[in-house]
Amino acid sequence: MRTKVQWASAIALAATVSTALLSVQGSGAAASEMNPIKAIQESPVKFVSEPVVQPLAAEEGQGAADNAADAGSAEGLSETRSLAQLVSEQALPETLGEQMRCLAGAVYFEARGETLEGQLAVARVIVNRAASDRFPDSYCGVVYQRSQFSFVRGGAMPSIRKNSRGWHRAVAIARIARDGMWASPAQGALFFHAARVSPNWRLTRVGRVDNHIFYR
Image (cartoon, rainbow, N blue to C red; front, side, top):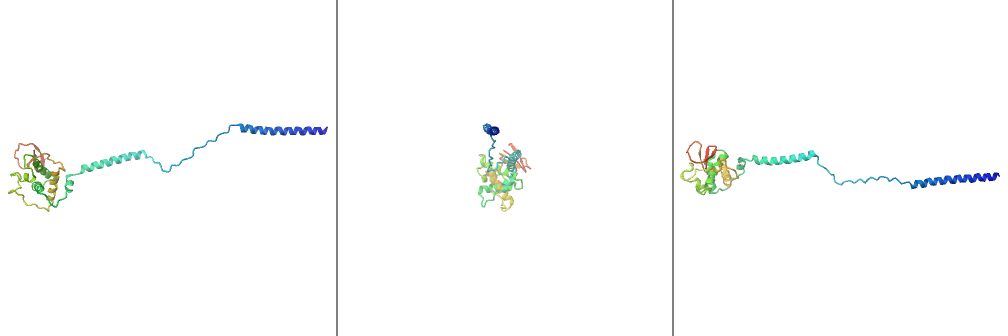
């Protein structure tokens, strides 16, 4: 009898252990059937081989200001150019043609004591006359035309100091006038006289430059 009870206890114990094992397996199955939580994977970091630099707003504004300043400087440079600078840029040629000698000689004797503008105005009158049908068609013809220039005596000019600064300026002014490099302050003039005299010409007055009054 005791033996049966022991066997019954052993069977009951075995059944309990089996149930526990089945419970453990069942819980494992249930865990395996749960939806797995997906790990969030971040995108791999990409490195740029070259630096990317974006200009700041202040830098962009400064660049525009610099460009404007450059444009202003270039414009200011052209405005400051003067007749004196243009004269200084004219190299004295080794030889001077006869016509240019006549033109420069007229500037030298008629206006060498005046401003460069006054000398240019005188030179342009001679150039204008040579281009007009009313006068001889060469500079020498205009300069040596009878009773036109008081410095001409006996159909000739006095001697010129060729090494003087006044002559170098006269040659430069003659070239500028001939080539139209600078506008005459007495544009279109064909006549002039010293301001100290009053010939009462019936001509259109262009204006006065230094000691001469110009007409056309």
